[in-house]
Image 1 (cartoon, rainbow, N blue to C red):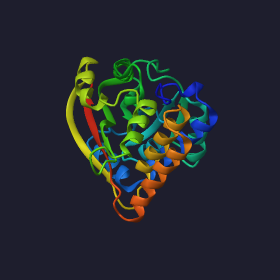
Image 2: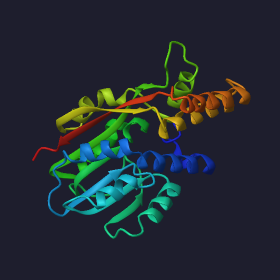
Image 3: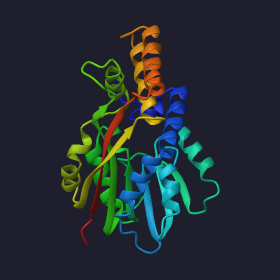
Length: 268
């Protein structure tokens, strides 16, 4: 099945609403916030910086960027009018944020318009991430900065033993919600091919045990995909979800994803 994020303009409204909820759940997670703060701290935001977030979804990262020191303006770009409607509602109190409908591979801005370009968990969903990075390079000023953060979804696991049944939910999730689970491992090379000069590339470990939120959405979405595609029955899908919650209750739950961040510059 194709990545629903990559085909979001033709995705059923109920699925888009579910995606919107998941984006906000993930953004509210303490560990996710810490990873965002960590890699943004490596970015050199010039005074009165103009920033573009490409693939902004409901806008949680754009909202944080709007409050970042030296940032004067943030523009969020996303192909989904539904997600952008939510983004505008949630950022209505912020005067320096705006949102525009558009494609990562055809940005509606002139050359050298922005100081900083941010991709936050976007590139792994794109069928042409190299083209998106080339577009980011084009709209950045000479000396501008790229910040790209993405999940290394090839590392995603819910397993606590060999042949753990919950891992089939992860695999189904990756097939339907991630275009390229290996993208994070090739990111520096793709960025260099687009003309960027990487200055930092590092990993961020994300693990949920007690009180999981985001990785439970992976269980649920993966189980639903398996049931809707006929690979398993609905009863088994519900049993997989129940098993995840049983592990939460008895404190044996484990969910893990490694993320990577890349900071790179456009040569002057």
